[in-house]
Length: 221
Image 1 (cartoon, one colour):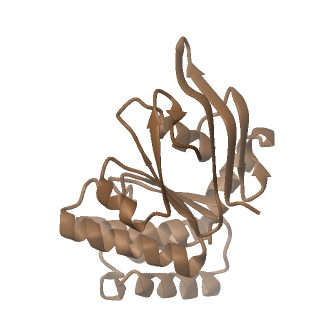
Image 2 (tube, helix red, strand yellow):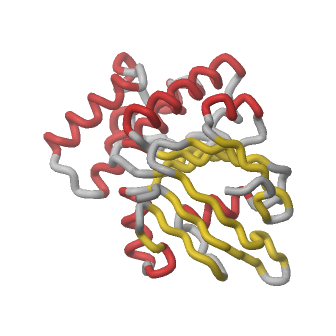
C-alpha cells in the first residue's frame, strides 16, 4: 500500500485554477521535495493532501484511504492519526511545555496516560531534548522548537508527514541538523515525507525532487 497516491487532481478558487491535473505517489518511507515558484500550487496541494481543502476533481488516497469519500469528522481523524504536518513557524501551543506539546495529539486520540507518557519520553529522547522536556516554547531556540514539532508530528505514528518549509525559519547549521533528524525519523519509523521548500539543500535528504509550475508537476510524480 502506498503512503500517498494523488491522481489527476484539480483545484480552483473562483476563476483562479491552482492545480491542473496533479499526480504523484509516495511509498512508505520515501521522501520527496516539492519545489517551484510562489503561486505554483505547492501549498494548495499540501492542503488538499492534508484534508484541509477539497479537490474539484481527481483522487487522493493516504494510506489507502480515499479522502474524497470522507466527511469532516473522518478527515479530522485522519489528520490526527495518518497524516501530520510540520510547519515553518513550528505552531507549538504556547501555554504547554515541550513534553505537553508532544503529548497533545495522543490526548486527542484517547491514548491511555501510561502509554502516552511512555511514548512521549521515547520521542523526546529521540529528538535530543530530554533535558528540555519541561521548557515552555518561549524558552526554546528555533531548532529546539522544530524538534518538539517533529516529535509531536510523529507521536500518533502517521504514515505521511507534510513538511512546509521545515528549515525556512532556521539558520543553515540548525537547518542541516533538522534535515538530518527528518531523514533519520523517516527511515527508522518508515514514514513517507513530502517536503515543500525553496531550498535546494532540502533535496539532499530526498529520494526525488518534484518541480511544480503553474499548477502542474513538470517532471512526473
